[in-house]
Length: 302
Ligand SMILES: CC/C=C\C/C=C\C/C=C\CCC/C=C/C(=O)SCCNC(=O)CCNC(=O)[C@H](O)C(C)(C)COP(=O)(O)OP(=O)(O)OC[C@H]1O[C@@H](n2cnc3c(N)ncnc32)[C@H](O)[C@@H]1OP(=O)(O)O
Image (cartoon, rainbow, N blue to C red):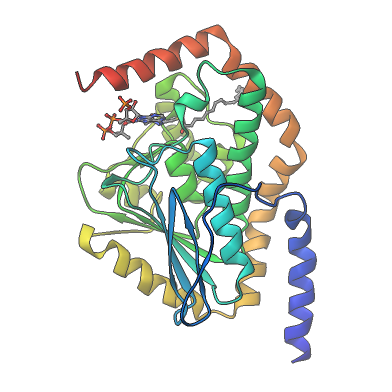
């Protein structure tokens, strides 16, 4: 009993620095509907939360069609959903997955980084940082059930999770492919990849902008498991059950021990990182290449 209380105090002390200033901004979430068992179901236009209170797990489905690009509004809704689940003692784990067929997330929303003013770029980048910090340091067990392609920011979101299950579909690929767009993955994207697959593999993947198909993703360690498409959700559920078997305080403290130095680096350089991003993204050459890339995506259909 005394040990459990001591652990709770220690956990709070360790988590406190991240709790401050990391609250999600108010957004357009819909009213929470009371479930029959007293557990709240969260709804918002772009995030569907399916709670399983008996298991202590919620499935968070991203539905920002057509490609789950991480727009400012979508990021805000994701953060609010995460915060609500973290604040509800019923939940110990979340599974993040996509409601858009064939696409986990197309990454950062290119329209947020193209043709806007510096204030907008700063606001957007702060939201991207927030997404990374909040998911990376979440006290919940977070498992990615990756049921579609997951480039760049989509891969980053997966990398913040504790475990990644990828559907074995040759059309799907995952990786930080920023260099292919003529942009540079920021240091905290890089650090997260290095922490996951090691320095040498990360260097090669980042320089070449590699998007790994399932077998390669598993071999290099970008994902932990590749399973048939129809088993992605059930596999995520059974992995979650294993993780939830571990005493929560011990697991949470270990997660923080492992991730704190990486998160601290961004926390101490957060404003400078925003300034760097704004300077970089405002460059004519970068704007031109992002614009051309967006046009190419649009013309692909026609
Ligand atoms: C020294 C260093 C100093 C400083 C560094 C400082 C800062 C660093 C600076 C920048 C870092 C930025 C990091 C960026 C991270 C990112 O995530 S960038 C985004 C990367 N994503 C991609 O490249 C994916 C692009 N999309 C696709 O490849 C395809 O859309 C798809 C494979 C995901 C899906 O293909 P389809 O199903 O065929 O769908 P369509 O291609 O037809 O797309 C439908 C629709 O959606 C629009 N769209 C697609 N992706 C995005 C996106 N990421 N953002 C916004 N919009 C997107 C696409 O244009 C189509 O639009 P419409 O034609 O329907 O209008």
